[in-house]
Length: 214
Ligand code: ADP
Ligand code: ADP
Ligand code: ZN
Image (cartoon, rainbow, N blue to C red; front, top):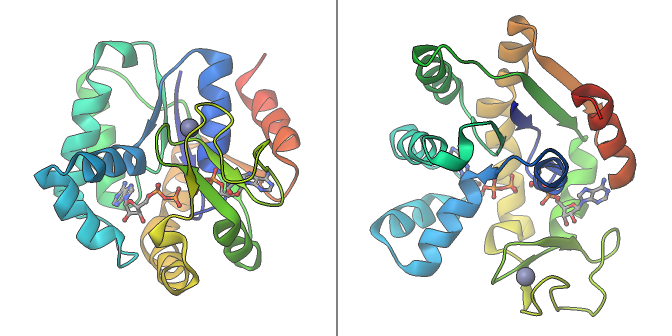
């Protein structure tokens, strides 16, 4: 089962992707998480990616595509995966399609988690991310048991630098310009499924199960 999560930044792709990964036993592959892990480790890749991420811009395709293709070539991805945050441009989607076609393979579903821009700023200003394990919460909608502390690993929760309102506006316009065209791209391939991302996270997940099967 190979799935792509589409949607604006903050739409809930990561939240749903983690639930899909748990239920269906496939790895959750997030390019944002891979970049953040590299930033934390201080790698060259991390330094380069950070210069774009801090401005709310996309990391260039060449860099991003290489990382993603390396990741999905790993053993644990042989039976499928859920991609969260990739592809974000048409060229990225084309490279992925070509790489899969060479293996006689394809993406099964592109799930668009649809949330209007008005809700996005609230989602992102309330998002808190674990500095250790990457788990995400929302201060109002999906709060941790203890404020500021990760339920899963006990480490500190922070507001991501790129979730501050100054950067969110830029990320939304980048989304509309560069990523939203993918909705049409996957619709034409006949694999697009659109779900209402404004519902409670459990209801959103129920809609996804309807698509993927029990
Ligand atoms: P969000 O969960 O808010 O959508 P991500 O964690 O997916 O954000 O990504 C954070 C940042 O990492 C993006 O704003 C972008 O700078 C960079 N990034 C992640 N995935 C990609 C990608 N596929 N192409 C280019 N840049 C990416
Ligand atoms: P994305 O990966 O698309 O950027 P996230 O999964 O990180 O989005 O979700 C963005 C924020 O919204 C987080 O704070 C998350 O806890 C919260 N969130 C996710 N799904 C829902 C939902 N259905 N209702 C309300 N808040 C949600
Ligand atoms: Zn944690």
